[in-house]
Image (cartoon, rainbow, N blue to C red; front, side):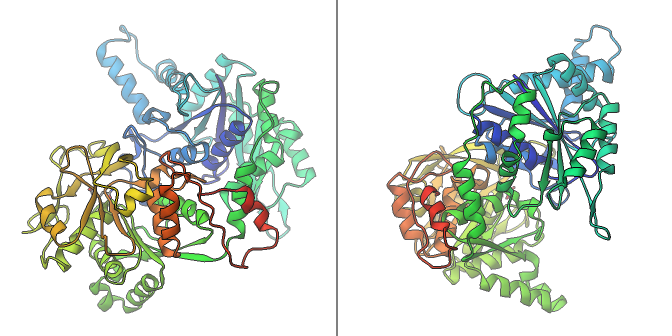
Length: 595
Ligand code: GLN
């Protein structure tokens, strides 16, 4: 096993996660099998209890792990399926060390950060690195490890010490350290400044780690003399200094690495030069090119709580992007703060109310993502009502599905106080209820989490067709509440169709309005399994419906030649006929069979 460690210096938010994923992708493109580990030095056991407002979305894995959003980037870029153990936190490490101590495994020793915690970190890395994540047997060739935080943080010290020992133990030729740093440009003189990187590399060295490669974030390409200066002061060969300058979309980052031969530098330091092939990134390049030239917009109203904070809904945005590219449309997300749609806002802040409704009404489709807590719930219900009544394509995810059922019960069944017991515990008409197996006292890891099976109830629904007429699908879940099975017969009689259920037939997984052009709600989170070039079926359905392509897509998806995130494959070529495409762009569309 070979290891690539990615660290960050100077400031946080440099895009270390995207850099690490891109390194993984380019190594994979060289014919290597790649896995990854993310280290988060915070004390939380996992990301499940952390606010998306502060920390970005909680990404959910097949095994139910609630992890850092960077694991989503790895899964999407590398098309792999990770496990909860691929995300290491200080909380997990200390928990394992303390459990061992309580069992008496340390045989009377004084348990200390060095060697016990540092050993536990190294053992964890070695154990997890060999878990196959790409559907093939046996361990991967390379494990990319991303160390969260910035060099010098107190929290990351045990990890740095452990990784220093680890690099020494696995030896030269098996370990490559890529340090992501910042080269700021001072606006007055326009000069690229190397000092912050020099300091950060010095800090890294003083902690026992030596960088093989410097990946410098900068607004523009690094000047030759700036690279030379960095090389001299940081003791890194000139050809190992890469500039990650600002690019139009993140799919370009692996291409930047390729153009600057970063893969050669990495392969050389890992002694893999004779073993790896030339990178094959044709499909990836075509998709990045296509993404840049699309300009026929598809407008999606995202009605949520944390509007404007892309990281809070990262996977939903990525899934929308994958679907939009497949439909040859430029994705335009209109953030609609759910509470601004409510009557209370009309009185308190009429301008916000008006602008929220204008955005909603201007959209081609409406998406209500998952969420917790009652803020904005009434606004989300209004958005679902608007989409249902005006025949606007709608996708409700988890909470977005639950509120669409509440709305239907209120408006169509006339049950004015219909609600979820999450928001109104004493409602007379609880159409969404707490699941019997949940815990009301412990928040961490107690939801219905991870991959669960949904069985389609017949093949006539749009969702069944979009999933390629399969009898069941496996998607990821994260919820405590569910549609009240006692109310299902009444809802069905009134025209709501429960197109997918779990294996017991009592838990509702997919709801649809058959008479509506596209009104779908799902208890699961399809966004987590969407991939570039393999969009999630229901996102594809939403975007296709928003740009009048749904019939064509349904036809293609049922012929089983369309590549979708759930493993089905469908051949879907729907290149735009409009003349909006720049000359030459058809060449890349011809190579690319995106779906
Ligand atoms: N709050 C709802 C539940 O717990 C929805 C959760 C979600 O949207 N992820 O069931």
